Length: 343
Image 1: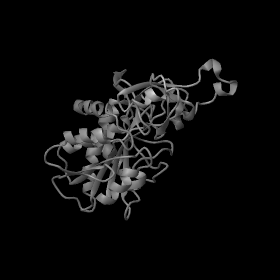
Image 2: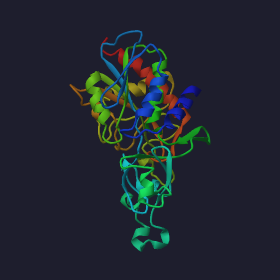
Image 3: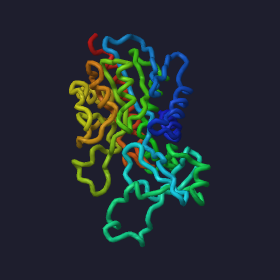
Image 4: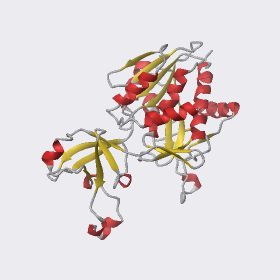
């Protein structure tokens, strides 16, 4: 399992927001074993066919998204600072004062009006992204245009770190965690033939999964994700969503999906059987590629298994290693269970 942790770190260090997943995809392809077949579709989804010991009656698909939240340059001001927009759901208060890398190589600080110039009502309000700028140190627009162009992507820069009792932090754990778990499964032996799909553009509306689900046309799907954990001081128990250290998260419903109830129960039964921790989400919120997959073609029975993650969509997402390992073990065991359905 130590290799899984390192794989998460390698994948999350790569920049790849929605529409710019190429480097992530190339890294994953470079790590695929020689005995699998793969294709890249017109949107950039990576579809990997992995042979198992048997062919399942019901076609299986496992999915995780390659893209992370980020930013895109929309305008260059006369003073050389950059206007930008979020790519995916990023709250402005996690952006102000942060360092961003434009095109991965031009560094800048996110700037806004200083505190002593704010009006009273502005001091308590969340800043608007439209009022923020990226300061790349350019003297004017002409100088900035030599370094960046409209449509260039920008990314959080943050060091990955291990801290406390088995915690990991860094950018893009959503959803390089799921990608790492899938890649580990592809490298090993599996009981049933399975299509593993590394999707694109999840953060801007599950667009890649929409196309990939029609291509693969599965009967049953597992979506591997991270999900928001609000287990921090000041949050009431019923609003914590899930808790780090309590194992893999199986959802019963979110904003995009009402999950298959039999698969939901099977997930918990399987976790108990193999001796890993498992929990559910206590708030109906968020969404993931399941929202696109479960309603594709004639409908797909879908289960989402997630790693609980604090500070999602920020430069310092936080997960716990034990939850990562529990999720990986449960996902592998579920292939065995789901492949047996209908036989």
